[in-house]
Length: 244
Length: 354
Image (cartoon, rainbow over all chains, first blue to last red; front, side, top):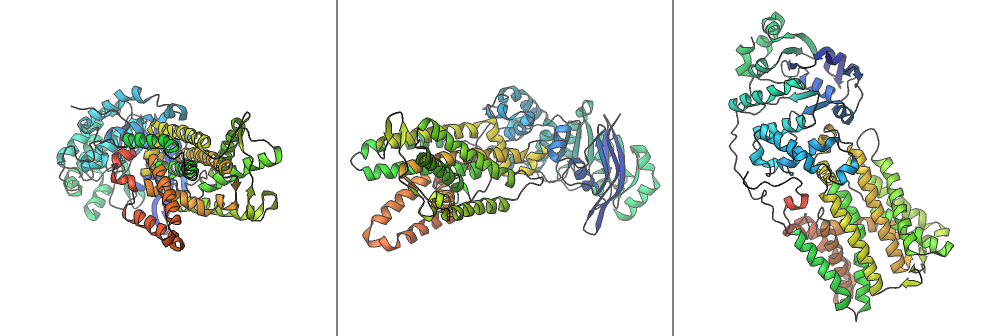
């Protein structure tokens, strides 16, 4: 079943054509990698999917529903969740409160005012912190975490929304090889209930966790398919050997 | 191909060693003690100053203006909405109850104070709809200028409107009544203002410490991030802005009854900016800080204006003191005692030993 359909999406920043007629299908239950040289449009595409900016033309459908002009709020409510490239944890709140803030986002205004879900959500927040190896830092400020731990916190927050599709923009940026390995292990179990689109420069990482890949170059889809197909693609090899 | 290029494309590793704990993590609670001390002081004032009615009047004025300061703190300190127009809601509500008293001969507490709250709420909700609920999230500058303009325009409007007394304002405002009892300046009005302030403070404190308060704390730090969590950030802002307008309206009504007067200056940028100063001087985001700020600024004004040697220049001296605090102690006088961690708040369970 197709979860996300992207049809002819284009985006121009002044004179720069960042995306040029991109077509991608993401199936439910798959991990989909977006790769390509710097400036190929990967992050722009991810942001267009999440609603950080709108596509100039084309259509984006999520579970068959048109979301091309939907606000980030509407997309989040529909089941899309984005982890930013630059970590955007809330540094002056505790690690626990960061995850609680994400977890409680589905609550109504009266419930939030009466704090009626705080206790009920505790086990969910604690489980996420445990899973992402942050439980010992739960009471520390998010701004005090190491860069790698902030990335994990970001992923935990994105997952706290119980999304159907998680969008990860360079989740291992700035991480040590060991942390990257752990990140891969942390992401694998979510496949049972959530699809993933991931932008990542670390191709080892991408190869290990993704089922499908789309290669972007100069805002266009150069090639797409499973990992084996992309590894053998002459077009892709040419781009990566000449321009990366 | 992927394996050949992967290592070259990977970013370098970073040191991930972290130090545990840290000063900012240790939550040292000071605010409850400050709150208790302020409450004790507020309860003692009428008894200690019973011989000096002028000082009881000053203290009552501090309590009433504290409502305006809390109104601004709800906007800025808790939610990151820079409003330079809180006096607008204060003044319009003050005018509304003065007109009800003059034209309808009515000033019953049980109806006029809720009316003032309603006026403040509806007017601020109207402003929120224009300033905050557009398709694109507004910038802080846009909101600051929008509220400032509203405050200025309202001041100019009433200054030229004969029905509301034009530049002279409305004087001889009918006394606030509860049945046959009339609240005149003095201890009874003081305790009425204190009761109202305590109720508003308790409500604001409840809001700050609730899960909604966590949303506001997050919104103040990074509202874009909150939108991606699925929060309707602008709606939350509009809600807090409207509640703050309601609190300002309540303050305006009490001010009008207490002073027996309301004028254009009570809704203009001058008083709006003073509310900002009360809050910054005391310590924004703490709720009790703005009350301390109001008390300090008003008492300083009273004392300085009464000293013969500096009578002609006391506003300059007050201005320099305010400037000094805002420049060199931007977290206000409470910032000397209260940590950022406590000011912002902690919402989840603390787990010692984990």
